[in-house]
Every structure is written in structure tokens, then in C-alpha cells.
Length: 247
Length: 342
Figure 1 (cartoon, rainbow over the protein chains, first blue to last red):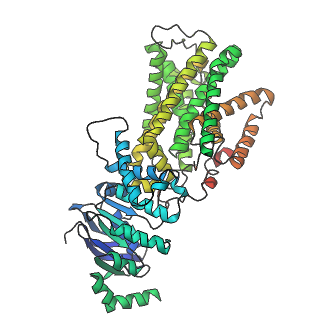
Figure 2: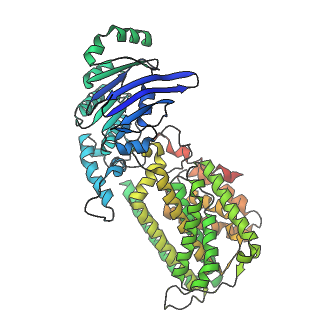
Figure 3: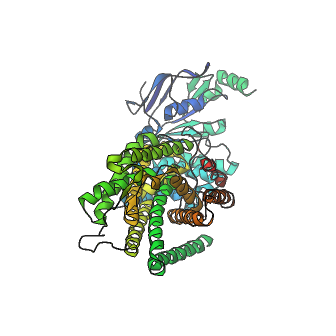
């Protein structure tokens, strides 16, 4: 398998429980790939393995042609894998702008030699348009801890984009959002540049079908099915799995 | 609007305090001037404690270690090399930075209460070494008769307590200004971000241990420079100047001043030291009791310190813990220094 990211034969055990048992996953450049499955299927675990916060017991993760299996989350972020957490993770005492500046700093390129504060200024230039894109310009100077849940989610997306990702990992981005906020989120995610590939873990199938162009179904730590959204929607196997899992 | 008012009031108070400190030596006797100079040096160590505890989120009881290293390096080496204060300051700051750099592998991977314990152990070890290494440090008798310094090439020697006090004040003001500038840079921003949520900072691709090591070494250099000021102020040093009670009082002062505030740390540390020295005369033997009561009152009445800083708090969670939530940050401020009760 080739592509932007390929995870091969990934296994993770928690004690005697096999959270993942030999899962393969391949994501191409610019692809919108969704990961679905009943609770406990191993979706978040697989996201953690790709992001680097969980070390698999077996298997490799290759990103952009390189084996990144041994790298931690920070090193993978520097290579272009950024992540949005299930509960929005922002720096509460920093303002929205400062949050984005911090996220942008590792990938800011220094231009025309060194000047005091040059990198920070460059990161600031990056932050403004991103906050505008996420509709956060009005609250740019507000500490992130004072923002509403939905705004924190948008801020986290701005932070993830500030790191110039090639692959964005989204762990249930719609969790805890109101219907209006979900609509806005879908718009924002649809507007993401095609230079960014997305791996989306989401319970809400309407979102999955609206956003993705490839779907992988996990169940009990194994790949149950993979294909286009249409194929998955009509697959009797998947329907059966969801009926079992949800009940 | 309210923030603006608070900022102005704070600026006015700072200006008043600074003006008072400048005219102080003409208003008080020699003995008090000497005490003030020593208190300023300790306040500078307090600033280094605040930098680590409040800004970087590493609560420390061990800043007396680089403080002692700076003082002894200044007294033993610096006075051999030159009688110029600036040179001695550089030697002392270098010694503090080197000691801090050597202890980076012990301190930086640890978090929360573990940092307190490790830094406490380092501080105690340094005091023990100072007490035993008689040939160099003079043992528990300390080093006396350290020759006076001249602040800069071509200037006269600091011959009286007023001059020594003013020299200390100028150096402390300069270094505090430098720390405030440093905190406005990218480095300060990253330290605050790491204190807020270290896991998130790593997820953005930052090398968090590198920032923390830098903060630790910088704080060591500041404490080392303060050691050189102590030598100037007292012209006598002994291991008793760097004991556990000093580091505990400094942390207490920093907590009272508001852990993330540099100015607050300076004021808090100076206040606690002054209260201790004053109570020593008024209530012999009971000073620790009163300071303990002061600490408990501070933590319960002013969980974010006298100098209110939004959401300031100390990192007490292990690095693997889930990202902290912004809710109820005040509650966490109670946690950093339970050890002081003991």
C-alpha cells in the first residue's frame, strides 16, 4: 500500500483486551477518510496510534514515505500530522490569537535573516486570517478559557491548520455542538484546502456521508469493511454491525 | 475597562514602590539599609522561583541551590578574578546556570509535587556540600572578610551600606526588567502555554522539554546573580543563608505575590523575609508559626495571589494526564505547596 499515510497490521492490547487486532489503513493525499464503527471498535485508539500518543504493540505507521512508528506526537506534528481532540484542547489563559500563534510557531519559516521577534510576528500574520476564517475575529483578544464550547472547537481547528498539516486527525469534532454549530463545522471542514487530508472519527453518519469520500468500518478492533460512502451505506454487513453495536 | 484600571493602579503602585526604594537609604540607618539590600537579593531569587513555579509550571524548592552556587562562586572565584561587580555578577550567574544545567536531567522530566521533592533534595545536597567542603567554602563557619566591590571599571569601591544597597537595587531592577522583557517574547508565550496544557503544546509540535530546560537554566542564572548580590550586601556568607527555611519562605512569598507575577513575587518574597526578620525580634521562636498562618490565610483568601493574575496556576498533573479543562482554575491554586504545612 502507498499513499500519504499507511498504517499496516496495527495491533494494540490493553491487558487481555485487543483494542486493535491487525488493522490496515491507507489515506491518500487530500482524501477525506472517515473511520466509523460501534462503540469500542478501536476508532480512537487507531487515531492515537497515527497521532503518536499510543504506541502499538505490533505494526508500522508510514507517513509521507517515512516510517514514523517510533516518533512521538510532537515530532509527528512537525512532519505534518495535526490533531483535533474529542474535548477541545486549547490553552485557557492565552488569548485566541496567542493560541493560534503558539500552534503556528513550530512551522513558521524565518525569512530574510534573524530579527528580534521575527518568528512571532510571522506567526501573528498567519493567525489573523485563520481566526477570520473560523469566525473568531471578534473574540481574538479573549482568553480561550472564556470562550464557548463551539468557539473553542473552531479555535482548535484554527490551531490545527496553523501548523500547516498534511493530515488532520479529527476525533468526533461534532461532539457537544448545537445543530447550528454542527452546520457551521461542516461548512468549515468542507472549505478545508485539498492540500490537507482528513481522517475523521465520527458517530453521526450524516456528517460522515456529507464530508468523506472514503469510509473504513471498524468493529472489535478489526476492519469490517472499506469503500466509498455509497458502498458502505448499502452494505448489509455494516448495517448488521451497527444494529448489533447500538443495541 | 476593569482590566485597564487594574493595570494603571498596578503601574502606579510599582512606580511608588520603586521611588520609595530609591530614596530609602537616606531615610533609614545603616543596619536597615544592609537588611534591605539582602531582602532585595532574596526578592530576586523569588523572581526566579516565580519564573519556574508560576510561569513554567515547575514548583520549586531548590532555587537556593543556584543562589548558593552563585554566592560561593562570587566569593571564592569572582573576588580572585576582579573586584568589578559586573564581572562578579557574570561569574555568579554563570555558576548558577551551570548548576541548573547539571540538574536539568533530574528536574525537567518530573512534574508537580515530584519537582518539589527533587528540587528540595538538590537544595539540601548543596547546603551539605557547602558545610563539608571546608577547604573551599570554610564549612559551616562560612566565608567572612570578602573584599568590597566596585560596580564598574573606574568607579569607586562600595564602601558603605547605602552604596551597597543602591548597587543591589540597580542590579535587581535591571534583571527584573530583563525577565519581564523575556516573558513578552515567544519564549514566555510558550512557557505559559506549556503551563496551561503541556500535552496540547506537544501536539502542536513543540519541544516542551527544551523550553523547560531553558527556563530552568535562566532561573538558575538569575538566582546565581542574586547570590553575588548577597555577597555584596552581607560581605559574609555561610550555608545557613541557603537552608530549607529560605527556599520554603521564598515559595511562600511567591505564592502570596501571585505565582505568575514577577513583580508580585519580588514583593511577596521581600514581605515574607521582612516579616520573618521583624518577628524574630518581636516573637522570638514563633516566626514560623505566624508565617504558616499567613500562608494558610493567603491560600484561602487570595487563591491567585495579591497581584491577581488570570488563571495562573501550577502544573500538578502527570504528563500523561488528560488535557486540563479551563473550568475552576482557582481550585488548582490551592494545590502547589501542601508541603509547607509540614
